[in-house]
Structure formats: C-alpha cells, structure tokens
Image 1 (cartoon, rainbow, N blue to C red):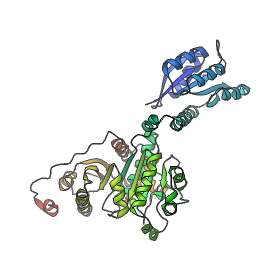
Image 2 (cartoon, rainbow, N blue to C red):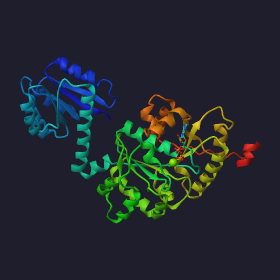
Image 3 (tube, rainbow, N blue to C red):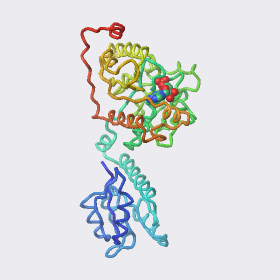
Image 4 (cartoon, helix red, strand yellow):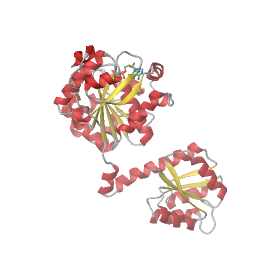
Length: 404
Ligand SMILES: Nc1ncnc2c1ncn2[C@@H]1O[C@H](COP(=O)(O)OP(=O)(O)O)[C@@H](O)[C@H]1O
Ligand SMILES: [Mg+2]
C-alpha cells in the first residue's frame, strides 16, 4: 500500500512542484490537492490521507488553523508543515497545533521523501502502540521466519542471508533482523561490516529476563536499518547456546520484526533444528558440483524424516550453464525443483564481501542482485509455492546411479 499524500497549497505551481519531486517514488501516491485550509479539511475527511503537506499562508483558512482542526478530528493523518523562510515564528504554533514535522522551502526531492517516510513510519509505530488489539494484530501479522540452510559449507548461505535481508528491508520497508546461528564461525557481522558490542553469548546470560525491549540492546544496526544478532566472538562459546535458547530468542524477535532471517552452520545440531522447526521457510542452498549435491541430498533426507521437507525451497547458487552438471539433473536427483537461481558473479560478490557492503547495495544493476530481489519477493507471505516432484522410478548413468 503506497503512502497516501494530500497537498494543501494555494499556489498551483507549488503543488505541481511537489508532485514532480515525488513522481518517481513507487511507495507514495498523491491522492488529492487543496487550495486552502477549508478544502484541506474537506479532502482529509473524504480521502483519509496518511500524510498531509500543509502550506501556512493560504486564503479562506490558514494552514495552522486547519492543522489544529485536522489533528483533532482526523488524527490518523500526519501533517507536515511546508513554510517559506521567515515564517519561523509560525512553526512553533504549527507544532503546537499538532503538526508532526516541518520543512522550509525550497527543499530537494530527497529531503521531501525522507521527511514523508519518517513521519509515516513514526505514525505507524505510534498507532501500534495506541491501537486497539485488532490493529496491533493486523500490523504485526505473520512475521516470517526464514532459515538459510545447507548441509555444505561455502555454498553461499551467509552471502544469501545478508543480501536477502537488506533487499527485504529495501523493498518492503519492514523490520528485518538477521540471526547468526553459525555459532562457531558465523560471519554475518563481518559481511555486513557491523561491529558487535554484545552477542548471543551475553544475551543468553540474561535470557530469563529477556523481552522484546531488552532484546534491542543485543542487536547491532546496519545503516539500512537491518538488525543483526551476532554469533559468539569465540568458537568455544557456541556450546553454551541451546535449542531452547534459540526458541526463546526467535519467539521474542517475532514480536518486533516482520522478517527474521536465520543464517546457519552446515550441519544438523540442536540449535539449528530448533530454528528449522520454528521457521516458515527453509532456503536450502545447493550448487552444481557433486560433493554439494551429495550432501544436500543427504540433508534433504534428514529434513524429510524430520517432517520439514514441506518448508524447503531449493536455491541454486552460482548457477551457470557451462559446468558439467545440469540443473535438471540436480533437480531429478533431489526430487525438488529449484525455486531461485542465483548466478555466479565472483567479481560483484567478492568486491562487496571485502567492502563489507551487500552487493544489492553496491551493485544494484547486476543479475545477481536481480536474482536476490526475486528471492525476496518469493519469500514474502502468500507468494511462496513449493512443488515437490515425484521421484523418478529408475535412474540411469553415472549420475543416476551415484544418487539413486
Ligand atoms: N553467487 C556467487 N557468485 C560468486 N561467488 C559467490 C557467490 N555466492 C557466494 N560466493 C562466494 O563464496 C564464498 C562462500 O560464501 P558464504 O556465503 O560465506 O558461504 P557459506 O555461508 O555457505 O559458508 C564467499 O567467498 C562468497 O564471496
Ligand atoms: Mg556462512
């Protein structure tokens, strides 16, 4: 749903200007215009905009009087006052009247867009806090827990988990957290270039008092807004963390986050199993080489016996047509269709890893970024589909016999 915006200004040219500045914003929509304060009230009543850009000096009724009335009668519309230099003395009045923010003309498209988003996001949060339980429920509906897993190391789990998280945050503007459950040798923090102050090790020491608010103190923020729960700083601390710790942590994160992306170690252990049990989707990462396919196949059998196969979405990383094994052969061997292909792009991926900045940001126009965006779309609630292929009856040839 785009942010619905109403513009109130008596000068047509100013309104046109604002429309131009917002033209390319896909998540914003101008739903109406008003030329004076009275019209602004009438249009707010009719259109229930999320954000109202309000000029101060207007005929019939000025912007401050209109702000006062609208913020009392239609509190769901957040008002941003747009003033010219020299109206500073009015700004205070505007804020007292209930405006959320003000901007001084002239402003850039970025300033305008950022202010609208900030005000809108704040308003959403405020509503959740004030709201009736029904609204709270709707706003926090279906947090998605997604595990990125493979029974093979080095296949790209962390690369995918981190880029997916950033892409989700960028596309949905929702709250995203990455939990690094590769407890011995996790590298989510290093791939995102964030410096952990505290980690999951410190968190479990306070686990009995833990709640959604305290939890925030253990997370590190990436500049994109994505949060990270880092793995322990030393491999030997990993064994302090149990499956029930993981259950509790994920349960608490669900209260504050829309997407919880879990990076994992390449083997089955109690902590991973707790995460796999709780998550909605398991992105099982494979690649087109024999050892990986063999291990992924074994992993898939275990997932099947744990009744987790239904959540599996097979992801092929470094897909490329010029290697010996064909994607179809792998699909046949695993009995699963590949749901997302991530192309091999060493230059992009390694440059971004070494810079500690996800390639979805550093290289927005590459195929590999496009494929991660598609993956992000796929995992959004309601979009996911699993096809489990029937196992072929007989398998011939080297490949078939090896995995038959
Ligand atoms: N699509 C890709 N193209 C090229 N290199 C990749 C790709 N995906 C991952 N890599 C590289 O493979 C290496 C291992 O990736 P990583 O995400 O750490 O794997 P894992 O977490 O499964 O151990 C990294 O150096 C990464 O840069
Ligand atoms: Mg990793």
